[in-house]
Length: 113
Length: 114
Image (cartoon, rainbow over all chains, first blue to last red; front, top):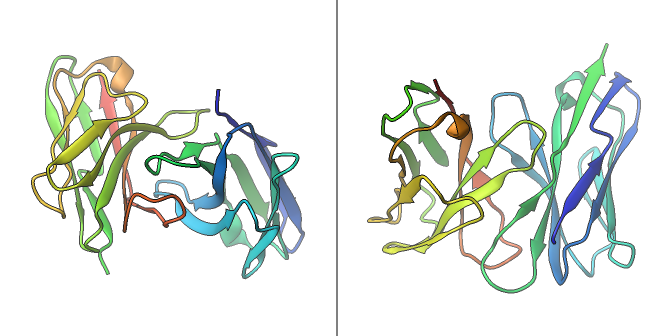
């Protein structure tokens, strides 16, 4: 069964610190992997999209990495800000067929001053 | 830049009532979909549409109907609400159905069925 597992479930860090969120998936065959940011009470917003041939993709202070061999991805946040407090969702798209995204449950990040 | 607009933002229903969640997009996207988000779980696909007049079921379609009469609108109908349908519902759209195209989400509708 296609699954996406994220860790940790929740994380608290101090403003200015870095953090790394993990995503493991069993989706195969695999087309692309996305990271979304979801603020409380809002819809998910795309941060990065990586195809299976890409190893890294950056969007400002957010850097996503992908290891298609081990089926692992990480999202690294540099110099965290209070506005980074949100849920971060890893999403995998299977290859072929319609764009049926498989969502992880997310990591809830809280950045404290 | 309205993007994807969902209404209402909040709704309380009694068991057995019916209602329609509205979703509209102004980006001329062909692909639209409905998800539900429950605590501790990833978003799950309810129904999707690859263009006007074409809809199909997703992972959890039971109890929901959809139609796509125009490119812009994709309403989700709850026929007879049940407490198990208490959830946050998100509508999403993308330019096409191919993998790799970015999906844009609405702000969600929080539905409570009592």
